[in-house]
Image (cartoon, rainbow, N blue to C red; front, side, top):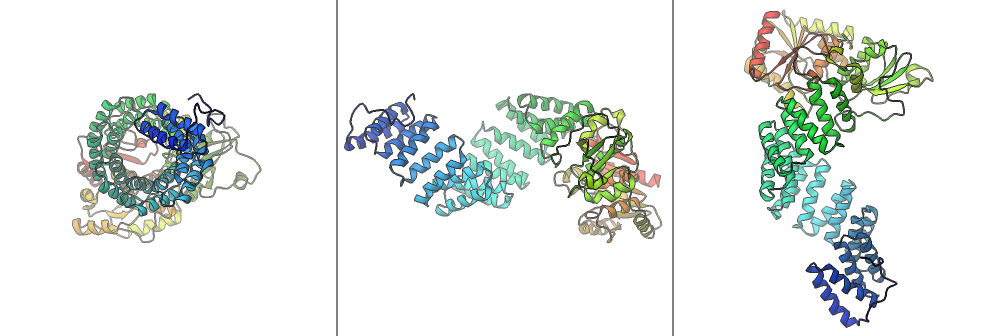
Length: 614
């Protein structure tokens, strides 16, 4: 429309009486509802300019502008309507819609609150205000509006759909499922309602129910790409990789330019050990969406597990932009990118979990060999273990890091900083550059001797420390074993078995004694979760550790304790693919499942090795 926003300076081509105005307004509304926007606009404009005190003419003119995708004009026209009559809630509501279209959330909130002040039971305004709060991630405020809306009308589907989404964002997944169930009870064929409930079940890790609902999404919307993508993702999380691959290939047929489909396909292929094809799909995803850090990070994992370190470390850096790595606090200190470290001070920030902080710390001696002074920010529980093993490296706790002057009793500032996982690109650019650093952790010797004596007094044979589960919710299934598979090992009565497993293991220990007659000693004096001093001393007190991939094996490796690591057919990237030994620790031996060797056969192999070597 070429006229100015309000048309206040224009004159109507004719004079319209109040009676004529009412007839014409109805005619204009009829045209508007039929989609004849230009004709409707002409009528509303002429009424507004001829009878400037008819507020609804300005309101309807704004509605036409909004429908014509001209929210700036609509905003000014709704304001004109409000200036004539500010008591009409609809005018304020419509003004809010114009503000939403122009991405002005603050003004939209004010307009919606004005509408609700006039009409507190304005249910559409409550739901829309909730949507604005949702866009601002103000989940509590959004939920408050939605609760008001549903209290006014228990069958108001839009509010239940939004409640399901908001409750998921708040981490209240059970409540989200309840809201989702209400929405599909009201409207079983509402695609958004079914989709939100499917997502809520997925957030509960109720993969089967989520997948069933995503099937329903696909029935309701055969081209609804998110139904396919999320169904595939839930199959991945449920370790149903063939099913995930099948549905994601269908998604690719529907939307061959969708980067998320390529990235999820790559993940399911990597989960099957098909890394070369996974790398190809990751690259296709990145070509379509170069700014997606998750895709770059996932590509990094696939490259690293293939030991393509030069390319892999660079992609691994993208993990600092996602939830995969970190948290690493921002710092004004210059980032180290490989410059000379002679007589320089470098601040190294620990990241991720205990295992990664230990594993990556094996590169710290390389910095010392370059004549650098090193400060390592790490988990508080690791500090005494590092200080004994590497006294030349200064440490500071992650929970409340000290200033550099407090650490070194000087006004000197650090010359460089780096996240510990980022050291690999400079210090481990090839497989040949991996240097085995022995004993980068050192347990309390007195505590270790105390535990050693205690465990030797339990029986005459060698002491075997065992750990069979990961408590990490992201890797629990992939990295855990059932004690049932341990029977060939635990049934060897000539050994003393000590639990190195952290967390509550009473049920597992009781099962092992009842079902297979295995006595596994649980040391009541050791709290591995709270005290890594106790954990490390306990690990160093045994003759052999047999464990799945968890923090136990990293502590054991860094303490130089002989350790056998149980790995699935597909393992975490840092165990790589082609070795039965670790590139990080020299005391670890890796036992891998394969297509020719299932978990029970692998445990039988370990049991045979145990009986022959000890």
